[in-house]
Length: 202
Image (tube, rainbow, N blue to C red; front, side, top):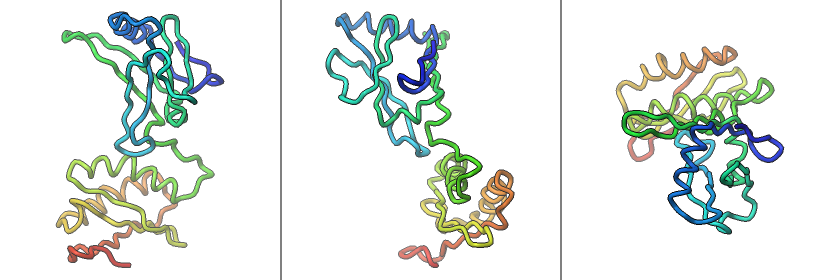
């Protein structure tokens, strides 16, 4: 079942997910019990979706109610744009089953062709590059885009001082950025990897 976007974000909650929620709510045995969905760190690489019980009258003013046959799902208004086109499904397995939530806009809305090169680069860094670097405790941020469309980056965390940073830059980040944004002419690292107290220079 999809909810009309005029009433809130377009979210598809499958029949199996609705059945799962109905079962959980029935076990609470509280008339009018609903659910509330909200996001932690929306628009960022570590964004996450949470769904909790919402007893009658305990939703927040400004929450958007999406009314289903047996329950109401309240959506945090600040999360609306990030939940557009999301799907909540419940997949049964040998262990009982689990919710599967997909939200293509969870980590930010993909920039359009009209948006700036900086916005497009930041989107790729936040959603593709940094999640991979995070597994090594590292990250990279955009310093500037030069008039010649050179992307100037700064490394931090585990990438600061790493002997493999040149490989990461050329074989990983540069290839990713230039493959998706062919207008980029070069990718440059301005991190001073020799200085621990003041690691960066301009």
